[in-house]
Image 1 (tube, rainbow, N blue to C red):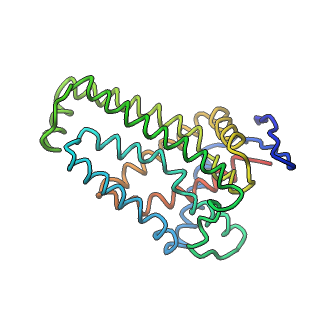
Image 2: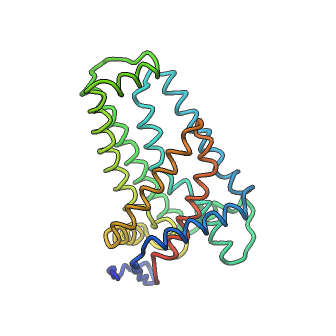
Length: 263
């Protein structure tokens, strides 16, 4: 078990420890996440319906702007913001643990309480990662293709899948994207649930999350793969599948936090 240094908030000291977790913890978290989704589908579907819509708008804007090569970075990078977008889901799971009913209007209560500032810091960090990923992805495309524009998605896919520089774009792009995803995972694996649950400051929350990933590299890498694969599947039918995938993952993240962090 890894012990973090103690970080003192005004008046109230907070000590947080990261536990050792395994694959069974991931299975339990996913099972409980699905149970939460099944118990409150109306709330959950309302809360996450905006994200598939945003995904479709991103795709439409990309085609309209003739920036087809940026579609994949936009779609995949959008997942970097998932932990911040799932705040309402964490709160629903927390209230269910307390056997307290919660209307959708209260699901984002943490954004207006004592935790708001710390959550905003995490959100800002994730947004900066998202922007950085888009800049790097576009830079990679320009390095390989210069100012060349793609006339259609079919033509772009043919170019990427059948030419050496297209393969280079896939390999390097996925490698770089994986690095950004790893950073996002380390920062946000349990940071926002910790803030919501214990009014932790942003530094303590991020430190706890990074320590959890460092002390459980295989388990958390597996969790990252599960999240990435689930989001990829959810994006396939015009992002509509995210309306199911996102809430289950959001609730599961709360339960993973419960199993991974001890007071």
